Length: 550
Image (cartoon, rainbow, N blue to C red; front, side, top):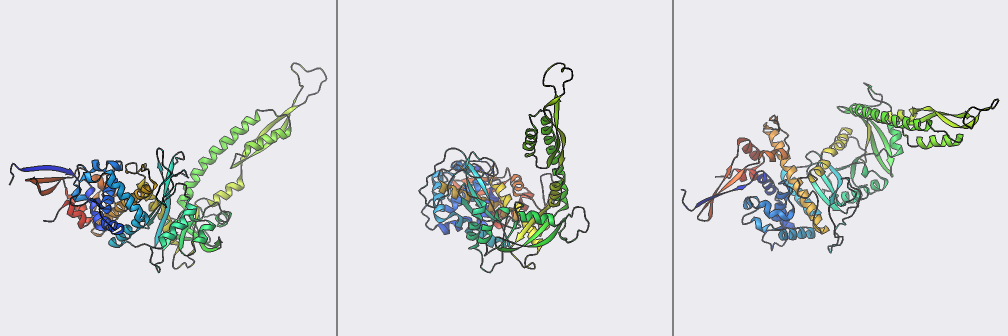
């Protein structure tokens, strides 16, 4: 019955119920609070972390200190916990939570939450994908931090192509198929992959089951003599850098395979890829090398190289044409000028003649009977390709080398090796693209204490974890139930991105019914059948937020 005391208000929930539901399913707040220990706060550290994850996955690019503003029109008690209000999520509360998370060990906290999530969803993998990336910072930055063990914010190799800015580095490990982050480690801004990877692997290995056979997958930065010797207790799969002379020799010696229907000595590894096995010892470590060839890559690289070669030829010919217009005092000067210009040509060399320029050394008609003398030297000739080099490069085109220290092929077939390496670009690298999204709240990090930066990076990793888990759960449930949802153009799909799903939930509100100053009921507005389908597939915690049980 509606009375004069009945009041109504609406609060925006949009897609945040999905985020909150996944956080509840994996016990994000509870796991963090258990590790933190004492809870003398109005908002627990775990609840504060969940609030920051909700803020980050709100994709509104709102700074951390504006969190109360973000939650002002949201059902905070539904999304985070009973009795929590937007005003409680102020910068003092969140800053203190970051400090406590740092004190408890941010890497360890993240690993605990990720392990709990993988256990809950039954996620297992043999392959752990490892990479690192830099996050730049704007403005002046305090370099002193009373917290021992905090990272250093400084200049370093910038993957964002901003060498003018100071930065921090994050090392990330994800699972093979679902791209679920399982390890996040904050590093100083001048950290190098070549030096940090072994330490990251060693730390991550400690949480693995001792008898679990697993493989670390990384790019060619892992492949160095020092690293391979340090990684003697783990199995790895990586790409061999072509800076190694032995790698170049193997690619050249493996023979041409382009457009050959049955290349000698090669076998089909998987559709579109052929391979040839080699044994190798590098850095004192025995390993299996596989030269992999892709016809599609060969064709693509050939077209790219043809354009590059044509441009190089034009530049070389232009440089030679300028020299041909000059008169040199002596033959050595002419030859030296050509050599200096040709030193910049990678794929071409000069084929020239140095000819004397005859003259009379004075203006006007020469005296009767006088003979011309050499007045200088002129260059003539052409630019020709370095055929031997081009032939060697053609031998390498469309090929790369993957390596592993697992010498037993039956335990790690080449098809698995290749599949694991190819997944590097869609697992850990995808994670970094997500973290650097311009709409993510920590795109340009702003906290002034390095220790808090480390904690914030961990929260960013938790946001990626929740996003990836939701996407995996929805895709898997769609397949298992033989269902689809519409994509951006209305076509049915079983592989939606959560970004698209989040967009579909825009405009969903929660109607709050208040009688005599007390909340008497809630009703979700604008929920359509496709929304009900999605929240049901995502599990009971998500469903109960949008469709509360009677």
